[in-house]
Image (cartoon, rainbow, N blue to C red; front, side, top):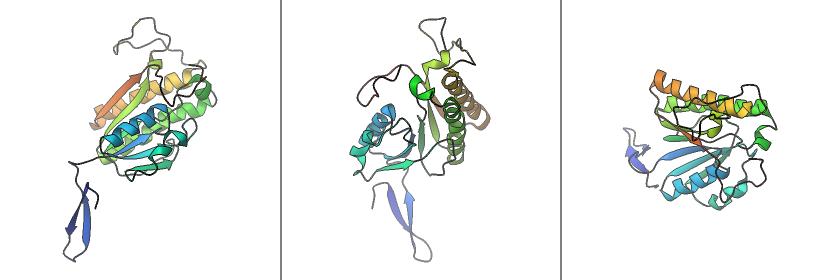
Length: 208
């Protein structure tokens, strides 16, 4: 029996499995086969949690997660977040979206859909499950900033029709959705605006 399960017996003598929520969590990471997502999954597994990694492998790669295949607490699901996903989890980290110009400009319509439809689908899942959710946003929500360094209160200087707009405005819209779900539905949210990040498993020559 896994440490996060307990056995109960109903009136018919049938064993029922119930989860113990004060032990480990079952956590969904979208974009989990990417650079940041794979490092996050490593961290969550080391903390003793179960992790569901969802990725369509457009920029993510199985190489980043192949060392986890033997871990019984890890599961990979190939899926595009622009389509609904039906799972039972305790927390969601939404990292799904190509983050470098060479990738997000390859199919700008799909990039916008990944940010916006992906956010809608993950927020809908979090609402149904009443679980907390984190959105991996970006410093690109500030556009071409007129203020350095940028504070969270700065609204940015963004071109809504440029070549980078599919990413910039997609992420801005995703933030809008997250805060509206918080205000309208009381959903517990976190938004992290990530600046340029480098390290092991980072894809080289991406134009950043």
